[in-house]
View 1 (spheres, rainbow over the protein chains, first blue to last red):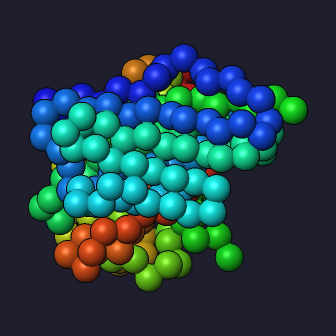
View 2 (cartoon, each protein chain N blue to C red):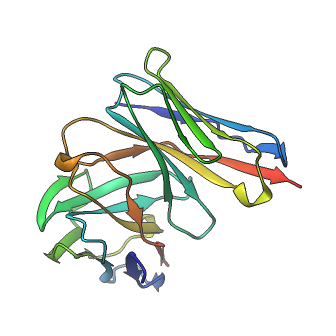
Length: 113
Length: 115
């Protein structure tokens, strides 16, 4: 079965630096890979989606890369702010139109002022 | 104004009881989902409905029964609650996947505690 690995240890960085979070998966590459943000006591919030034939996607201070050879996605937050502190989840979606997302366990990011 | 709303936000109940969680979305999405987030924070899909039709039914005990009266609503009924059912349950919606990919919109979750 598909396995997704995100760094389970919290990532602590200084404000203004770039945060880089990793999502690795086994077996087959998904058609789409999504990143979500989750704050304590809240539901996940969609951030970015990248297709398997795309190498990189950007949205404001966020950048996602997708390497199907390495079976890895990297999620970058540039010029990080304390308000970026949250848990970030990656999710895989395979072709087939069912909409089923397979989530990683998330990485908690703490940005210190 | 809430896009995906689910009620109640908290539910504390005794083992053996039957309970329901309701979900409504006002985004015009055709597809709705139920996810369970356990204590280790893993989100796992339980069910999905596409315009009232059951699309995904993961390996979930048949004590869990979803019901979709229309495409804007997806409720979850749980019979004979067990301690292991304690978790946070999230409702979500998205556009139909055959119209192209897109992100999910999640509700704020229902924290179920079985005592």
